[in-house]
Length: 137
Image (tube, rainbow, N blue to C red; front, side, top):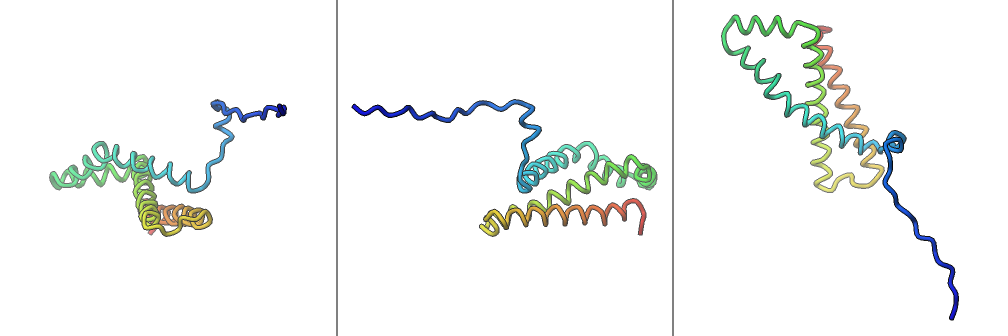
């Protein structure tokens, strides 16, 4: 009978919170998480922020003037800027995911490149619309 050395099997253990802090997701993973966060943000903002502002603009001329006063405040502009980023990021990432569903750009290099493009385009569009929101042009 031949004696074989017992092969040590790898042990997989649960990770703790401190290991999660040091874990780095790839760019496509970060994009995926932010896509979900922006979708949830838009879903929750619809009945709490967007529809009340929309209703305020259509009630009367005084309501429309009140909407102008409300949107003139800096805190409201910051909230609208976050919602604007959420929409633009969700839109651009959604186009990327549609392309992935059509089996375009599935390899690692293309996926990383398209995730970077989505971040760049959504942040650039947010900057342009944010400058318009704050009255730069």
